[in-house]
Length: 149
Image 1 (cartoon, rainbow, N blue to C red):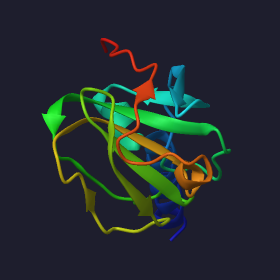
Image 2: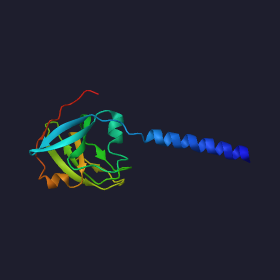
Image 3: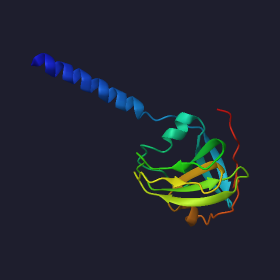
Image 4: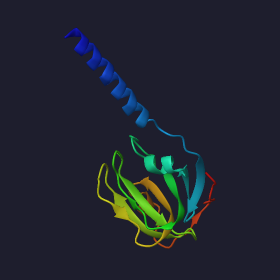
């Protein structure tokens, strides 16, 4: 019986280490963007791992901060909020840096929100930030430089 308890403790310990390793936050470069004269400090999600993690596991996101997702080519991706704890607004942006669509995302929702037109970038910010800053469809996002991963 003692051996079984000992083995169970070892197995559970190893499982918890795997979960912690999977939830480890990646690091993201930051870049200053400007939309409608308003500046935003954006973390850059460039690699597959960065795009997959996005803002998952974050407990907060300050106004004036966000995450810019770089896509490898024009596409019509879908986003969801699994393991994302803060409400977000999402702007889909085309290759000419124009905002095409703005959506509201709810924490931990598994519903997919998809681009309705081909895009090259997606920008997540605290929910309501775009409307508070009077940022709307058609506006230009300045400062996007496409990095090489």
